[in-house]
Image: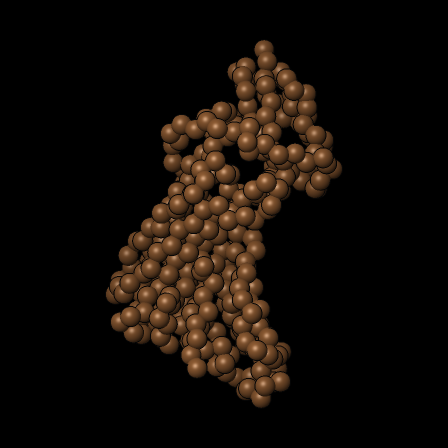
Length: 323
């Protein structure tokens, strides 16, 4: 029986758009690993990107032996390609839909977040993701150059974008999303996914981008090439409603004039960002342990700050600068 499992699931003015750098969006640098214990196989993936190959091969071989399934059936689905199959630079990522034995027809998956697949003796338990790109901007669009060769006229590739943030103290909450199906193309075309935010007052801190070689109706052999992934974001809304505390971090004095001190017991290192009321970043500084930020050149007025660790916001608040 064929099945498909797809992990794709207050004051604001007009802000200027800014490019968001997608690490290794050009698919130029790659890592090589070995997956599987009984019949190790070489798997590849672009650096800063992740797939399900290692999990499917490794866990598939482990559970497959208990079910009498050959350890040779579990297959790689992400490949490093070049030549006419690359848009810019030298390489692209090639994703292929394959029949993974008892798992059924499975799309090739590539994401900038780590994909976790729960596999048991009864089959797939589900997908989850962790990580992604830490950002202080709100993503408006994500674009990529793609080429798609479906093995069936009814198959299509898919791009899924998720914006996550801390909502009422709950980290990794989904606050925005975008989705696009990709049709057949014999050469590279640029496609763009527009983001939707049901609540525009919420702040995103993590961007997750996922590609899949098949969507609703999967066909073995459908192939998606992905290259030159880019994103555009805008400064985020700042509001007293977005302020939340962290007892292990102190920011003082308030009001302040020349120096803003940060006492940090929460983590080894922080990135401090200071924003004007229109969302523009006016100062930023990396802080190890306790530190301070020079604000002597800032005009008097109200400002907001955020303190992050690897993109995760630990504390946000507001200060008044006086002269």
